[in-house]
Image 1 (cartoon, one colour):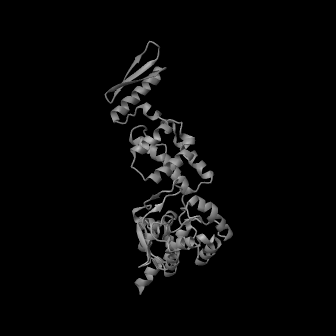
Image 2: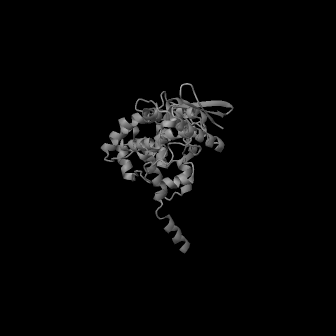
Length: 347
């Protein structure tokens, strides 16, 4: 239980025991001390008492400790997370004690991210960079509740991808520097992610059955360049190439531990440099406004579906972790699946 006593200074001191240790807090008014004493006694009785000092640590001092207490992540994920924390989170909340971060402030911050032009999916990632250490603070009894609870995030539109028809793929491939022409066609047929085809070596192509084996990815903008595992376990896969694409790959005569696709100078690909120096100018020249590099993957998968690929084939060939993820992303490309089934049942 808690007790109150008046000190020689005229202030009022509330004392209680917590975790085997005696703690205290001073107040200038007895009414405030009485109120605090009742709150302490109630929360001690309910087992929900938190030390007021626990939430006084600033986010600057807490987030690295919070991450060390959480489930380990890949090195690249940790790097991206730290970059988002430094750029978007700490400038607003870094110097604030955890207990002083309110839900209203978090909502206003999220709204500001959207107004600044960030895509809904990016806003969600940035928000999670803040919400994760706040959630850990609750788990380790530094906060009673997270200020990130019940925050309204901008909706992520489904199917907001750009799909090219074969003629547009051809137009893009012919508009880009000849050195990257095959890369564009390869990406638009295989559906590999940028890091996956940037990480291909000559030995990953099997001439006997004309398949390409995905074993690694070139990590995004790493300096120095670094390889890592594919995005998910499903990313380790082998997929067959069309005869025409296989012949083009064989004509490159790339064998052994040499990159299959490189820059014009022979260096490893860097997605930021490729996007700004090659892809965006080419998109403008080909009059394909709004096209992103990742849309070549979406183009490939939409072509598979158009040619009759089942969701299982899409999942395995695309290196997608589950059929649910595949259907959530590409299910809208199966608009007649229900009607086709009904017709077959009729037959």
